Image (cartoon, rainbow, N blue to C red; front, side, top):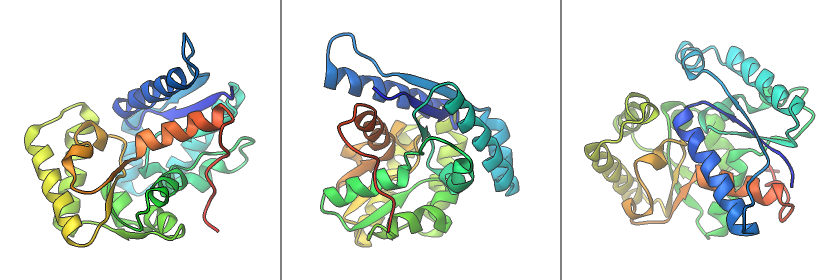
Length: 238
């Protein structure tokens, strides 16, 4: 079994989910007392969040590059970056790294296409929805990506940062997300990507009238499949 390097802490609430899902998947596949070979590096999210807010993405990329190299030095055979938003600095994270990054966007795109969906709605942080780094990665795989309108993007982002990363789950926020999802479907979305690792703490498949693609679970499953040698790394766009 390859050693999975989990680069988490953004936030630790979602990193817990990664660790749980990875180990549940290994147990389901191998049975018995089996669990995953993992190394976890958890950053201080307060420092990363300040870099995000200040637009200091180069600094954030340098920090994650150091963390990824620490995972490699600790024995990780590949790196799983346990956050959607920080894939904005994926290329910087990979600079000089001797092991591969299992890119969340590629794993998600593979799952969406396998489900026969081509036009997909995207929920995530304001950075993920509003900036091109994630949408373009999905589009390069042949997907048509829809994002909510400005008001809905602000709502989705606020709930993530003011509630979910702090472990706060409110029924009224779930209802608000359901309304955003409904508007994406009305706009033509055939499926919806839960493109922030914390979103899955709030909504699930039952909250959408169309198929949902929970990126945390998809990423964790892809990591285990690669660690066990049953699949190769998801292919980057050509």
